[in-house]
Image (cartoon, rainbow, N blue to C red):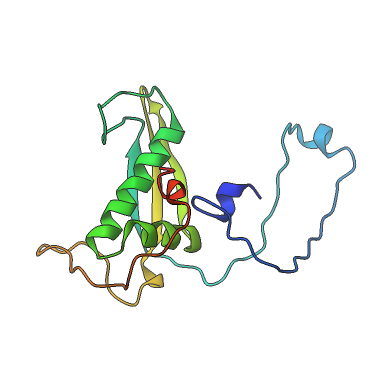
Length: 161
């Protein structure tokens, strides 16, 4: 797995044991005409079906509005910033939002790369991981207190996005 498949913006490092099993199909590259590996991940439980999805485009909407032609990295960053901003409106601190997105089973997808010059990436947060309703309501969001900000000895990490 790649780093981005395991965490939102950084590794969660801890001691642990992991067991891998693999099988190799001799001559598979030629048989299947693939130039890159394919794999079948194991089932992940629990599965969350409902997600609140945030969209990002390859435009710097929080700055000067510069267009980044078909740049999915910029689009992902915008989707992540949208999710962080929304979580802050619910009462989470910026640091808590980063940690939540790093630990939660978020799903990200390239939504569109055919609408040049705009690439679109989505980031979905499963609503079932929350003890309260986080969906938007006509009357607005209810802001709660989720405790003090997370302490950080390296504040520059928080400024990654």
